[in-house]
Length: 396
Image 1 (cartoon, rainbow, N blue to C red):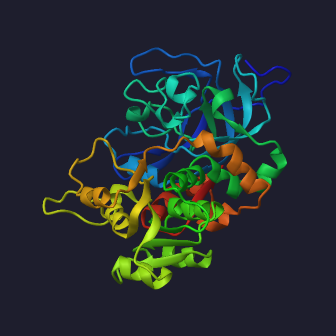
Image 2: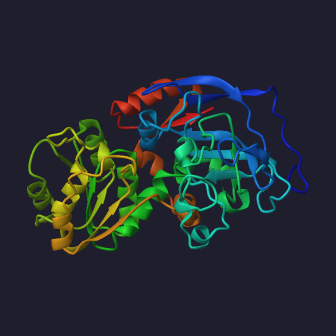
Image 3: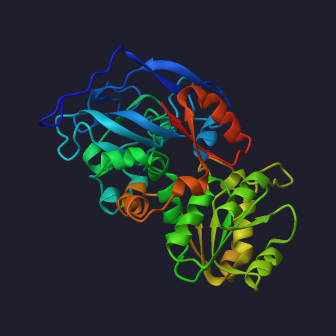
């Protein structure tokens, strides 16, 4: 059923195009069933009506580093729709939806959250207790371990608990005009902002960020928004480092020198106030047994001053190897404050939307947002996986 006073826009046919997992490391563009206002709450449980949900027609959906993890994850099933970043227009709303209306242009936070449990009431929407039978927290398009919710890299999408989850843009036309900016409001901009706040970034702070990909760049923009005096990004990827410099940040090539020395060359001292790991366990480096090392995190620990703070938005899988060689001694001896975990994206969307649309933050330029048709999704995945210095935004 629809929100009071409005009927659904027409959806023709019974199929849509979507980006799906096609096996380890592979994606395909396929036809899949259109979403409806029903939800499978757990494997083996019959669908039930999702009267608190809405159907959106996609305006923009993004390719993310986490999608690359999903391509190699053990919980991925062939044919599942990928993606967790979406900006769209509501075309149908369930009977119980009161705040969101047909025709609204909305940003979808990547966390699926019920808005009713103790964690959601505390603002911990990344660890909702009501949307995943396996563990707290759920994300679209990342498999059964993340709740089994269909991904958002499709022409249409179901979003449950719409009144709680969706950010509605007050000016739909303005949101459409700034689509490459607002497309980043569902994940990487809130993630970067959450990490910057977790690392206690404030006016005058000097910050080191491991990773000059889209999340690292969004984090750098957030640090600048919070008043940081110097923001340094470290990476091995020359294209990404060049882009970071072109949008006004310091950048260091980790293959060309000692990190503390390079930091000292830029700041006058070999340490910073805050460090942020935007890479995770995918950083280069293996121990003698071939186990990935927490190389980026250890770099961060090495250059943060005693009493400083670090944040870890980079992904370290709970199912991965426990022996990552994390420098706990460095963390302890420096008395570093550490924050980590999935970002509660919805918590920050209102203020960040204001920063974008009223304050003029051009986050699309900062992260190198590049529009690509849905037909180009497979190539976009390949280019992103190869290290392209772009944030690919799929426009159906």
